[in-house]
Amino acid sequence: MPVPAQLSPPFFAVPADLDTRYADAVEIDELDRQVTHALRINGRAGYREIGAVLGVSDQTVARRYRRLRAEAGVRVVSVPNPIRLGYETWLIRLRTAPESAPRIAGALARRPDTGWVSITSGGTEIACMARVPASADRETLLLQKLPRTPRVTSVSAHCVIHQFVGGAVGPDLHDDALTAEQITALTPARPPQGSDRPATRLTPADAPLLEALAQDGRLGYAELAAAAGWPESTTRRRVQELFESGALYTDVEIDVELYGFRAPVLLWLTVSPSRLAAVGAALRAHEEVVFAAATTGPTNVQALVVCRDMPELYRYLTEKLGSLDGVERIESEPLLHNVKQLGTVR
Picture (spheres, rainbow, N blue to C red):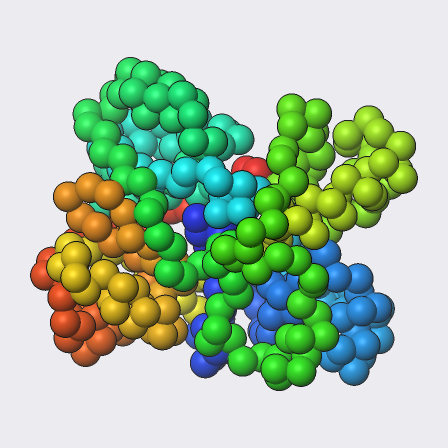
């Protein structure tokens, strides 16, 4: 979740207090957590670079990543950074006729401008995130294509006006698998969020390259050159330019259920405007929160929380979230099925 690693959510981050007793299909040890954390810091770091920081061989890192990808749903993806590119991010809620949600969600997931798509609320509601340039493109998506989709009974769209947690904002602060020194050693050089340096603009010619990186953010330059139809030297320069300017970033997708977290829930909050910043800062400090943003609309904050089970969600709502000054109303939607996280549909 994505992690919506995507929305980037990503999309789903692994909380620092990961307890492998709850994992059904895979056993996650400390080195696995360190490799995953390293990839979230720098998804394109070489196995040798990661191994040098972790104190293991590059073969060990490669073997661990291949196992995590095959058995635990871990995947590095590279996606456009809407904050640096000046794109608008829209959080969209669609209510559908019964049994129509899977087909509509699948169609949304195949769109290149959607970052995550999930089915919620008993299978009759879809939540998705769309990245669009601040132009007339949003009118096509929001005013024409979605409302005219057969079997959609209602649509509401919320524009993100400030992101507190997740995706391009930066790695999860609660993941403590790596030390501060290790994080510094792996962090790639790029302009910080809010930098005055403009990001390199994306062009239509970049589309095949972006599609390949959204499928596998760790593809080598030879593979990316074949996908883009460019010489390898040109591909290398372009990829480095896009990452170094902040136009692209990497994130990590994770199947959270295999890590023992069976209660991912979307929250739509109504917060007093004067308390938005304070509530956002508090959400950033909550280890259950993997995405949070202030939005337009009748509710003004959306958050994605990942808990082990519904009793843990209850404790979070009553002991942490409900006690925040300024939170006036909470609407919750359990995520029943994640159709798409950050990258392309696999």
